[in-house]
Amino acid sequence: MRHRVGKGARAVGGMRAWCAATVVVLLAGCAGPTDGDLTDDWGALPAAGPFTPEVGVCQVADATTQVTLTAYQPVECSAPHRVETVHVGTFSTGRSGPPAAGSVDLRIAFVDCDTRTSTYVGADWRVGRLRLWVALPSPSGWAAGSRWYRCDLTEVTSAEVDAEVVLRTGSLRGGLAAGSPLRLGCQQSGPDRGGGVGALHPVDCRSRHDAEFVGVWRAPKRPYPTADADWAPLYAGCRSEIARFTEVPDDPTLRLRVDVVVRPPSAGRWEVGDRGVRCYLWLSDRQVTGSLQGAGPARLPVRNR
Image 1 (cartoon, rainbow, N blue to C red):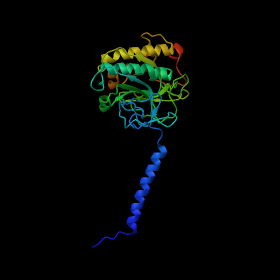
Image 2 (image 1 turned 30 degrees about the vertical axis):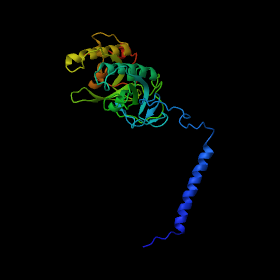
Image 3 (image 1 turned 180 degrees about the vertical axis):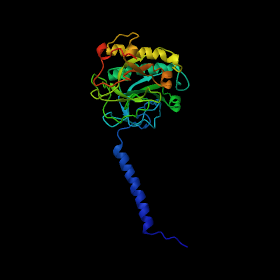
Image 4 (image 1 turned 90 degrees about the vertical axis):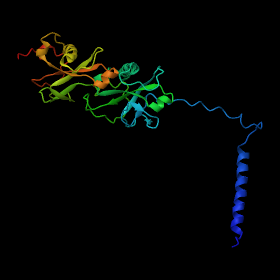
């Protein structure tokens, strides 16, 4: 069978000629004076470097302890978000991988994040409904040269371990100024099976309640409390915080005036270096309205029991 060459074939050939001419015209239009060497007229591209996250931006996704480049999607903090990056520091170590929990390097990073975050929000971040995270590069990021640690902050519904993360708008910078709704204050307790306090729920101090946040006690470097004897220093430290807050004597009669609720960080956070213990006063026999700050012995009399 013969193949006829007709108008269609001539049209294809004409299109090829037109395209070639167009390319020549475009090149001629873009070209400027040249010395004939096309390799020395381009600026050098910047050297590729490891990924480093930004400070002062937020993330919609939940907080994480390991950040990958693909998961890094910063947004303006005016947009709804769950995480705000307060600071980005740098490890000076030459280790082959990200530092593990309990390592000296990670504890140093946490102390730095702890200090900088409290400065950022205007008070110890633990006095508010806030949670601090230290995020690290992924192993592949570390292998590519990333040596940063990121200090991330989230707002939560309460200071309890089962609190939910709040989807918020606006920066947390200066967020713990006096009178801030983020600050911990009066609480209503929920009973546990043993008759103690199972959970604490934030309430308006104008409503009736039986507990109140009084401050943060910094525990010394020691193993995480497990036995009763391990907990004794934490209770003693929080009782001193209660005495200071309510302006009653810090002596043996304090136990007969008011009870105490101790909320240390989790065992995992303790291992990282978090030693801030939240302290609450608790009225196991009654409810009050208003804050007990500066209440004095008149409002917290010695109870006979």
